[in-house]
Image (tube, rainbow, N blue to C red; front, top):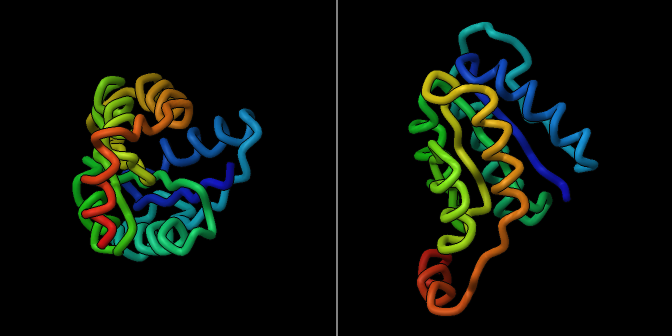
Length: 142
């Protein structure tokens, strides 16, 4: 799977750990930055992830920040993006099963690194259930 990843300074450490995990799992990772802990504006790094997902250049995206809230909001401004702010395994699984989320947002200040890594693995492995949820998802993409 081709996966774009991006963060601001507050999500940088987790971004680096998640990027390493994705590469170990055999995924191709497109790192959109940031590349340090130096303070920066998150939309500069989140929007390119969202645009790549929406254009079909990558299969999925992962965005990170301090809380993950602003990152999810910025990503969801791009048509065709369904970015889910995930805070535990259940929210990660349901975002794929029921919402066909194509971007996951995580907050480095909100969850442990171990939880974040586990959530990423589950999110990537969980298929969209389709069925009754498919029509709702099509409405989002219009």
